[in-house]
Every structure is written in structure tokens, then in C-alpha cells.
Length: 309
Image (tube, rainbow, N blue to C red):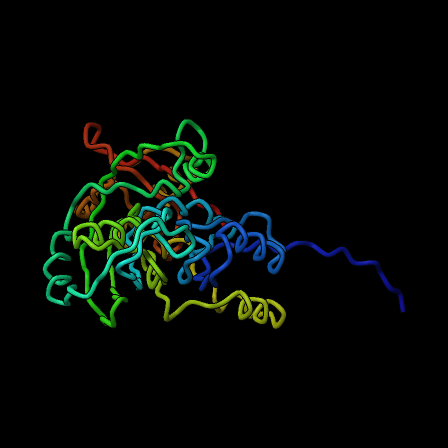
């Protein structure tokens, strides 16, 4: 019987994994581990999660990396433990204590009334110990070097704040908010308004865009799935990150225009245009083809990103 040397060819995967990140790992650590587990080069995360936090971290694979920016822009949900009476320089338990206060007079009613001040659109000051770049360098590096930093406030929206438990000095909150919201800053600001100070003791991200903690998998579970050839069971299609965008279904001739990057008209009743002026493009067999942008001045759509299987 003739034998032939076989070459191992890397199988390219495309899509999104809903990973439950453990505490103690950076988002980049997770990406590096998944590259090794899946033997894939094109791997990226959508929306950084601090090392001290756990929970949902969407990981984009192959063509899925091209929708990472849309996932990063999506809304988030968290469960946070906030400890009153202790303020740290990083606004979380990892930092050095800079101030303490008695909370004997702090009541649940006080907290409930103050939480209302944090609902809706607002400007929030990020922590000095954050990854936000200042003159090209992360703020936390400059803060650790002893620089006095003045952080610029950024627009955010907090849509929901629900008290899950109050066991002094710890308040557990369920939070729904926009991208860019720092829960550490929320903890600090809440403590300042209540005149006793506070810091973030624990944080779990329970949702990122459409991805839920209840449907996530750990790195250990991913490794088991990889060894048994069951990765497909956990890989979401790239367009699952775009469910908030309207849908355009195109005929064969228009599909050809899209695949060549050409603009096109959409003769059917136009979908309600999203605030981003973007839409998902499919053929009549429901294959996801592209993200297109609406140009009202020309009354046509222009492919923004084309996905070719």
C-alpha cells in the first residue's frame, strides 16, 4: 500500500465566540489563548474587559474580526459590587486606599434616591487608571509614573440601575449602559454624591450587544470543544453582531454589483434607516454579503464592507 506524506492545512474559521472571561486575565490574554486553541491567526476581541472583571467578552474569528467595531459600539450590561466607605486611587479593589469614611448613617433609601441622578445621557470622567490614550500613551501608565492627569469627560448613557442586594457596606447593582461607560467611575461618583466614598469591588459583564452571559463558554469549555471537533456549535455567524441593522435582500444582478464594491439602488420599500445609516445585505438564499451605507443625497446604497465566503 502506498503511503503519502500529508500536509496539515489550517482550516479558516469565521464568526464570533461568546467567551466568559475569568478574572485575572486581560482581554489580550484571552485572544492569545484562543489563537493557540483554534490555531487561527485572525482573532480579536470586541470591547475590552478589565483584568479584575469577568463575564462576556465577544471574540471575533476570521471574517468576524471585520464586525468587531460594531460590537464594541453596542450596549453593555453588568453586575457590580460597590463597597461604600473606602475610596481607592484606581476606583476599584486593585488600587491603594486614599480615603475612608463612616457609613453608619447610609441607608438604602439614600442610595435609591441618589441612583436616579445617574440615569440617562450624561458626561462621565473616566478613571485616571484606564487604557484611554493621552498624547499616545495609556492614561494608567502616566498615572503610575506619578503624573497628575486631567481626564476629559465623555458622553455616556445609563439606561437602567437596579439594586439586587444591599448588605452594608456592599451594594450589588444590575446596570445597563452605553459603550464607553466606566463602572469604576460610576462607583466612585455614587460614593462622592453620598458623601462617604466608594469603590468597585467586583464586576461581571452579563451582556455585550446580543451576547449573554448565560449563553457564554469558558476557555476550558472552548478547548474541550476544539479537541472534540465541536467548535461550530459555539461559533456565531458574523452578522449576529449586526442584528440592530435593517436588512436588504438583493436579486442576482444587484448582488454582483455589491460583490464588486459598486453602489446600488434598492427598489423595494426602503427599511427604516438606522441612526448609523447602515444595513445588512443578503442574497435571496439568505447569505450574508455585506454592510452597506445609505447615501440620501444620491438615493443609493454603497457597500462599506463586503464579506466573501
